[in-house]
Length: 84
Image (cartoon, rainbow, N blue to C red; front, side, top):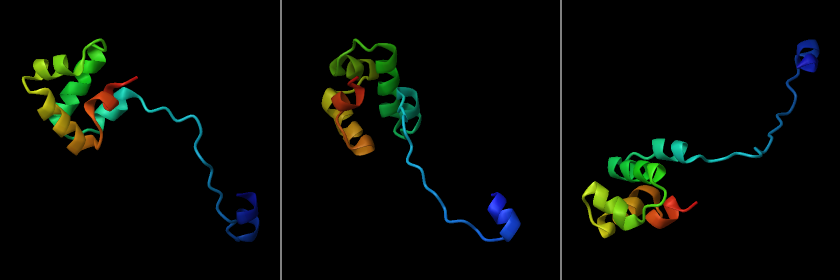
């Protein structure tokens, strides 16, 4: 910055690679647009001992239906999404 102010010449840009970025479940849930998927993730966050069938039962849908919604919304399975 001092060089730029003194000479008016813009120095080359420097890009730093991020380190130590953690993806929290809460931030992942907020980026999910599908309300059913969002609710499923919230239920799992509150009840991490639940299995997929229990989450689907709470939502009133089949495991298969919930799995399809996860695949469409997140391009992954519900099991992979809720695994620690």
